[in-house]
Image (cartoon, rainbow, N blue to C red; front, side, top):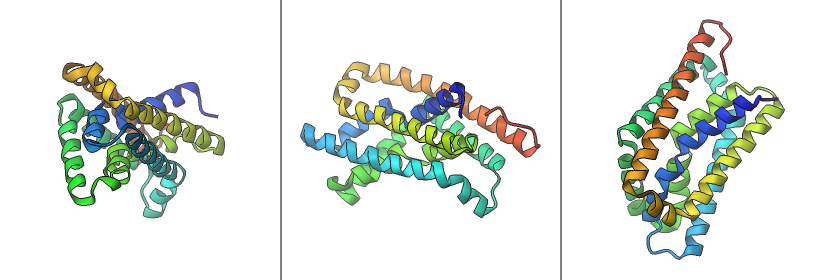
Length: 213
């Protein structure tokens, strides 16, 4: 059974990586001209698809790494560095620009009826950072019951993501440009600390020292 600290750490890592406040204004741009019910449908479908993707990686990600001959310690280091880069982008406002470019390109190519799959589910919600974080967290939860707890944590994170998308217009107005910038930077610093812990644990694992997670 996973400890409360492990579950809180997992929930925080996933929530910060998914970044609901950062996605809210982009979601509004993607669904411009849609009715409230249409936006709800897009948000629900995108969240469900993202949950399935992350759940699959939570259950089978370690097995895929094993087949490829990649140790969990090595993936912890690589994943931690990737998450640290995402945190760097959040602190210095690079990630939002990249997400907006991704969303704009997707509207042009796939048209609006496909946005719940691409780019909303992939890569805006379940992007490389969220997938890496999921595999890293799953590596510290080996038992069947612990994996079930992780699935619940993923579901809770994406439920909050869905709720944030439902109130995206109000959330965007409430935060404003300044509030969004402050919150994104704060979450970026938290993610940087979590990413550093992943790297430290990865180094310990490669040196045959029991990791903290």
